[in-house]
Length: 171
Image (cartoon, rainbow, N blue to C red; front, side):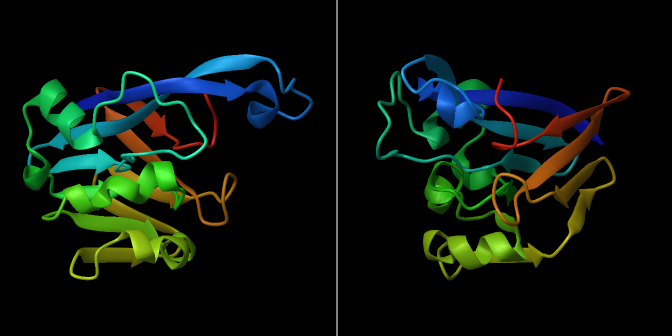
């Protein structure tokens, strides 16, 4: 059973409107955040995405490493994380996974083929094809919109279903 879901912001930046939607203006900038989600269940401490410690091409403002941001926001140390769900293989979602050395890394098979260089060889892996239920209230589902095997996370919490969507949409 999920006990907590928390967005952990570790930096902010701007994204050109044309990178957000078709027909957008290149010169119009929108604020974005770099964030990961923390989920606490009765038995697990889970991250949705690992974040990154650098992002070429972006001016990352108010940066703090995802691991430090996690500890500041929750009191949980990186080595206490039991599971990391990677929504897709882009740098800003997988680059800092090496900080979570005791976690099982859950990643869709097509995304793993693209991200395997970012995941240390001695890490525990769960590579799946279409979907995987990590817990009764937590399911990872391949939807393949943003990248070939990108996934969403369906989390049932307090009688509501939350969709954690990586970069499938921006808010």
